[in-house]
Image (cartoon, rainbow, N blue to C red; front, side):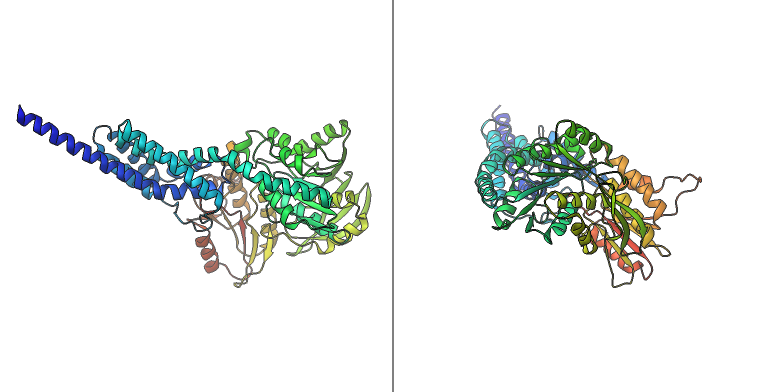
Length: 537
């Protein structure tokens, strides 16, 4: 009997020792895992749920990662019977998912004050899970759970710190509101699913010749960015302030307009961008329409039937609505393509109020006429003479990384559309490639389009089919939309034959650039359509 007791004690001690090994391994595995998912949270603007959503993508994007995830889960379950099995889970969590690096190639982790706060909150949550396991038991299982659920705990930390961050930012918002009231410029608010930044830049250019104007820099289009733009850039004497306003959900633009109310409101377009957050395009329309609440002039791109319907609705409610178009000369402001003038741009006719103001306006390649029409309407609304605004179209600058034509050392043409990520813009880019690359080899480099919700696979498959009809080569970057693009690019054409496009898959953008550099020459053309940061698979 004594021998049996001694054996049981020995086995119990060994079992307990193995459990502590697993606790240590699980805890240590949280460090590299935390660095990965904190980086994702930062890149996704600290939105709760983002880390878990990307974790699901990464762990299922390739067979190797899927196997690793399965092994980690099975080993975690085995920890119930054999504590040391959790070490396997810890190893997988520490090393994976493969492809998501700790440092980041295009989006390195930046240890800002906000990230440090988030990281400290996440660490507290991890420690809490482990301590509960030690005190209540079983320690090994909860240590493994803490490692497996790092993305979820990062999301919980994002949710927990969001109210604190909002309160901390309120001081800057109050300062911005005070400064805005003191300077008292005419505020122009610009929103839309796409075309916001281009239209904002067009407005600033057209107005600058007649009035003092400041526009929000880069993509400073959320609460913190807009407040920062006002506090740092709105100088005394500014007459017009052009504010780009973005949103990830209902109520965000309404919140911006409470302390930065636009007198002139612009909606450039409606599309499935951020559809995974909104759910439906009708909800996108309603969220964008929040910008019109305080505006005396509402400028809408009515080639979109949803915005045409909104125009009728707002006008019936007593708003002054200016309808803009790239196809309908009867609109209040129309900029209509009339002829192609080569790789440098296209010729357009400008019509306002039914009167033709110009017939020979050349816009740079990639410039969307509907965005220019909206910008012209804004210029007139803030007091710029129509003929003066039209005259300034002659030197309208192109927008960086939005179908920007740039030369290459190899002699081939490059269309840089890496800041575009919507179906309508992608089709326009293919039209530009068709004309620019006439006679040579045409190549499209793309990771596809994201944040299109349930339409993402369908839209990327269609995009692949459209690429096959234009290009000789398709270079697919990354894995996010690889299957959909490949499925579309190999679709059998109406003549019963596959479209003659050669598909190459590369892991990241630098590999694609090297592929292009070594294969293209004079007379060829490449379109870089969209670019994704490396926290995407």
